[in-house]
Length: 175
Image (cartoon, rainbow, N blue to C red):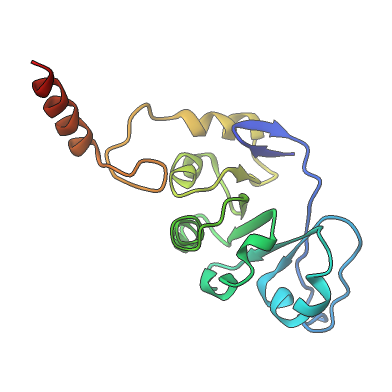
């Protein structure tokens, strides 16, 4: 189960993680919907681009620009959070949405906890695979922890002070 578009839904994708014996250029990709590591996509692109059931995931140290020519080929891109305190995935998500124009499902995987979900959705994530040892129902509540945002981000282009200023100016123009 995952959270997608603010609802708990069945997950029909498998996230492929390489074992120590496997390498990006020789791992066999199973049939079905598979989210492969970026390095596997880069090494096996010629074969994998023939499939319409392939997604890709990025590690926190990888750059979304490596997908710039392929970003629109994927119905799902995932970003791995190796640990709660690693925030690089937020920048990856923002860059995928704002700079590369990705419009498909953007999923957070790895060490994903309730406390992060509200902020993750602000930078463009719309799907979340919370840690399996945590309640997914509780994690879902994290998406509505706050009723107002102060800073600008992908989901709100203007900071609060600009929105208030615009509202005051619009009201003044009407009188």
